Image 1 (cartoon, rainbow, N blue to C red):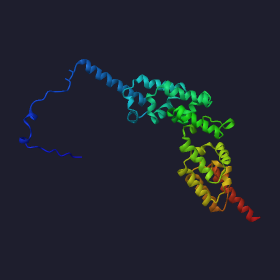
Image 2 (tube, helix red, strand yellow):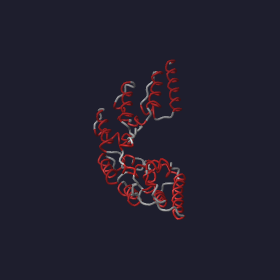
Image 3 (tube, rainbow, N blue to C red):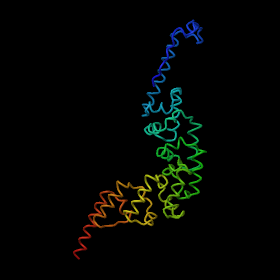
Image 4 (tube, rainbow, N blue to C red):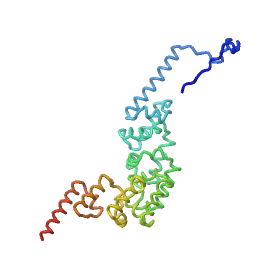
Length: 298
């Protein structure tokens, strides 16, 4: 935006305006070899941090943008975070992906921010120590979630829902702990009930296929339910017995396989149609065609 300056005629400007004014600023410190050395030392330390991030395969520009505190943090603080995560069994090869996703971890206090999550996974969730790394690698967001504000309340909700005993939270399902009960978990449960399932039926479906609580209502449930009911003429009982239906790609697997079956006049139960590989499905289709030909010649 251009700013127009209005130039006043010199006759309208008081003479005092042109009089020399006393400077209110502090006098500049002379540039000495000591200040030059300090500047060089500061630049060298910053360069070392950049090289360290690159070694970890963390994007320095992205990390500095999302976490400006990296600039003032000593390199030793960044390395203490790496040491803390590696003490959990996380390999250095996986650290870069985690720290690149969540650069705020680079300046975290291990004792205030990281070890409480480890303690929660070990003692509250009862994850065996060798499996802690799997939990974190599968869901790095655990490390930036508040233990008291997010993780513990969600664990209590899931346990009350039925994730206990043989269905207790494991390294494969700790991803559920970072979900909001009010904004994520309850709306999905209510959506499934709204389809016509009872609460107990939804509990049974979710315990058999916990991924149901991770799927988007708008991007997963609605389009798949719509296709299943309208195009496949399916019955909700089929979804009740095979809730894994929602884990398969609509455009990549469900639609093409269903259309091939319709084209040849065949029907298969959902597990038979979706659980096998592409090669097995093609072989199954050929087998059904041959069987049909044999029946016609009988």
